[in-house]
Image (tube, rainbow, N blue to C red; front, side):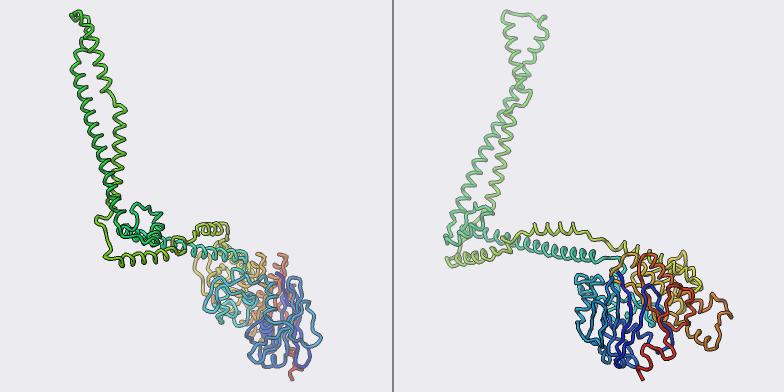
Length: 624
């Protein structure tokens, strides 16, 4: 993203126009005396960029200004946006806007609404209605639109926090901005992207739909089970009363009940009794076949035993055949022996193995026993004693109840409920295809990269940090705060002195902007306004100048406050050089009390104005 402020424009009530011009790719310094309006510039920039509250001083400043304006360069476009001065504490809703940056010939007049102007500028910040707060809080609602003002938290270091020991971002005393910072931080610094957020939101939406469909399927199945249980109970009672054929299959139960209700059949027990007799007859017939087969099997076994015994009695024949030459033979001996031998062999063949008859009989008996078991179960399912109605009234009450249940069970949420299995499968497939990049690993990598960048700044300003010059950067992601830790330790130090806190603030913001630029960030504008970073030192220097002395020669230069201020300016100057080396643009605006000699030799520091001797944001001639 490209962005820089070309000029601050003030339309005074005296019909004069006051403007202050800034350069891009420079550290623009406005220095001078207190109470000359330097700090008010930060409040005016914030006011022009849609602040709902303002900190502009009524005395001198607001009482003399009719309109406040900024001429800005955004992504190779030049805009002029102006806002009518507030009335007391009430911010004005009136805005003037020029998409070409042209100044009005006289005092501006309202020509655009705040919502339209904010939407237009948000587009340049890469923000649209799709960029939403990922999770809500007490003040911010989840899925509410992200305001570009939240990203301006990265563009200011006010005098209220420049030396704060634990607070690094402005407006953290306001609940809305306190909640906004952790919610937009990842997008701002490039840990997460709008595209990835949209994918994550889409995935979450699909997962919510999937849960709803799965719950619906579960409820449908539960109702279907309830329906089937109620149906089975009703059918059983109808069978018991003889109103429905007991031979009715489960899938035909509803039709059978409907026929019962329609035909108003009598309570005869003919179905149950006929079924009972039929099953009993079948059991008898099957049992008789089983008994007959068992008898046959027994007799056949006895027959084989007899054959075996006969075979055993003919064993001497085998001996005779073996000792044939030694036998005394008669005329019929050969015929007798041959017949006995043949009979012995036939007996052996018959008793040596199971015949197909053996296995066939066993299989037939098994099939018949299975049939009998099934018939016995069917018989047990029939009522032992036939139920009956005391009178026709009870019968018709039962039929009426059955009719009402059929109407209820025929509801689409029961047996006719739609099958959502295809929709569930489709949602699961969409979720599987939607690749959402995890951000936890990127958070860790970002923190490491930020610490590396800040470590270079620590090395550059080592002399100003005293005992902490050799310490290591330790950014706390969850707190969004910068700490220092002693080398080769895992604990952070409680850094003392406002001077060190000032440097920590500079380190953090410069490190964040460096990584934003390296990551191609589009949501955070590349500019930084710093209000009086030299607060811990400038009072002492002011006294030295009044005394007419420089003061540096009386003590070690590296330990002097003047040297620390110069190191801070060198850090800012070096950052502009780093941005240029990356092919990026970056602008700083610094309000100070220091003497211009402090930045002698720094090529990227530009003196805008010195507010002294009557020169101020509101010239003395304008407020007399």
